[in-house]
Image 1 (tube, rainbow over the protein chains, first blue to last red):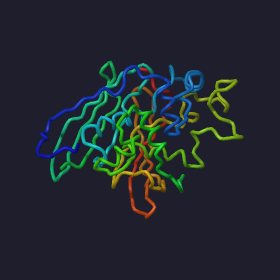
Image 2 (cartoon, rainbow over the protein chains, first blue to last red):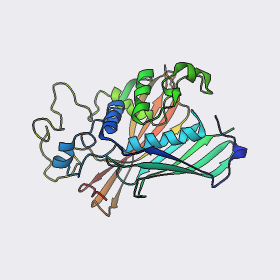
Image 3 (spheres, helix red, strand yellow):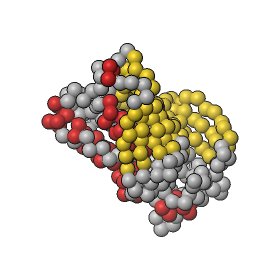
Image 4 (cartoon, rainbow over the protein chains, first blue to last red):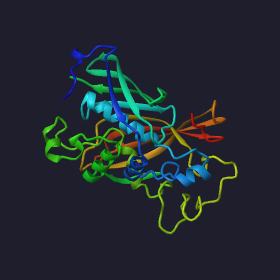
Length: 135
Length: 165
C-alpha cells in the first residue's frame, strides 16, 4: 500500500515496537543470515574475556534491519530511495526497541523521514534519515 | 575486498527477513510477492549487507583449516590483544551505514560488489578514548552492469571497549 504524498503532513509520525526482550538467539540468527560472525556478537566467552565487554551485543545492522521493517511497513515495499543510519548506542540482549519516524518533508513525489530507535530506557540506539517515493 | 557473484536468492531473503523479525510475506511468499507493486520478491532494505557471505576473503567468518579468533577450548583462538578491547580481534565497530537505492534487488538478480575506501577522520570519544573513523563505499551492480545500490559504511576503532551505559 503505497503512500500518497497529498495525505502526508510534515510532523506526521509512525511508531513500531521492533523487538521485545531481544534474545541471544535472534542475534545468532542475524549472524547466520548476514554472515557476520564477529564473536563479539555471538560468543559470550570471547566478548567478556577477550574483547572486554560485559556481554555480547547486537550487530548495528540488526537494529538497522529491524528499523528498516518499520520503514517499509510505512512507505511500502520497494519504495525507499535512501536509508542512512548512525549507531548511537549499543544494543544488548534483553533490550526492547521502539522505532519512530517523523515526516520532515514532502516534495516531488518524495517523502523525507527522520527516524529514531530507542531502547527501554529511552536511550537512542539508532538515528537515521530516509527518503521514499510516494504517489 | 570484492564480491564477484552475489546471487539474490529466495531462501536467503527468507532467512534474512526472519532474522530481522520481518513477517512481510513479500519475503517468503512468491504468489503474494507477484501480486504486489514490486511484482515479485525483493530484498529487504539492508539485505545487501549479507553480500559478505559471498566474499571469499571476509574475515568475520570461520574458515576451514584456519584458526578462528572466537572461543573454543580457550576464550580465543588467536593471540590475546595486549592492548585489550575488541579493536583488533573484533575488527572495530560499525558506526554508520548509508544506502542509496537506485532500485531494489530482486530474486534472480546476480550482483557484484566493489569496495573502495572513502574518507577517514578522528574524534575524541567520551566513553572510549580516541575514535578513528574509516569510510568504505560499496557499489552493487546487477548482471547488466547497472548500479543497484551504493552503500557507504563507516567503521570506528576505539582505544578501549565502550562502557555499558
